[in-house]
Image 1 (spheres, rainbow, N blue to C red):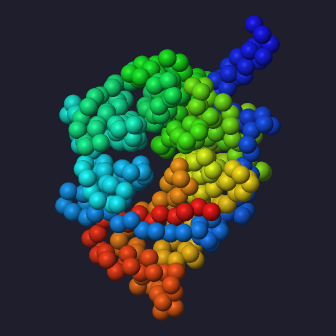
Image 2 (cartoon, rainbow, N blue to C red):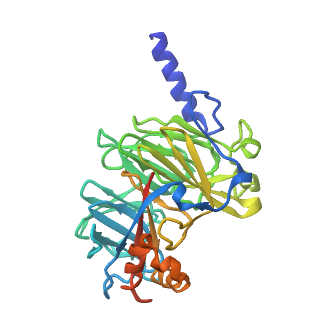
Image 3 (tube, one colour):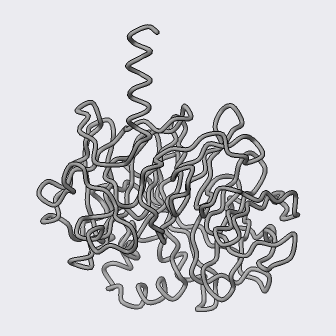
Length: 374
């Protein structure tokens, strides 16, 4: 075996053996500081805001929600009593519902994650170990049962038509599984991780040029674009970072939560966005990293000094075209409008927010706040 191939094989084996904190100095290193986390002005990272109201009718009443896909198709996952998956046009017009929740052969028990791959909607059912496929029009296509001895949390398709499946608990095959096009296991990675369930999404995130994976209690983000997890980004919180060799322990170990943990991940070609949680201070915040100049912005919420509209709190969805999408409830918009000063309302830059606030009622579906990153 040639020396370079031998070294590469050793590298792959090491990357599969566990998810301790990497010391590879070639990693992209994103530095954070817990002492500097707090509110930030929106104008620091956002250049423009526009608003997209989602059509309201009796077939698509939505409350708490996540935007799963934002493109020419907008796929919404509802998280309240109106539980369901809905498809809207890029103009906000309701098109159709995707499948139904239930225990029937064409239904999903739960929707841990929702993905659009080419023209098919994939619903990942964590509870039933299944992946259910629907057409864009919402019609049932196929159901796959995963014999992985673990709970699927997220999937992503690779260029060779295989898949990566992230599990929310470690199976005998590992924590991250490569499968064929029918979701039959080919190989597994991170097999030595203790069995520990994670309630977080653990999404496999696909930008135009990379596919990224993380595990909640690891500070290393992996590039799985080539079908093998390779360390790519290391998040360094200085004195608050996990010690070298740190691994998650079996069960709900309190040691896991003594350090900042990743609970969500978004990526484009230009930006990385992470949602973090720090148990000792009950602190949740975003880390936004810009690749071209290594700029890091950490914020608990963003104060809207761009158009005087609603502030941004919690996790934001980062799109491939460098926008962040924030669902705003109608009552949030109405409340903010009622508290705006006369000066804020007469400010020309507030025109779009004033216009949208005048068109909605408390019963309206959420409005998508679409913010262009600088």
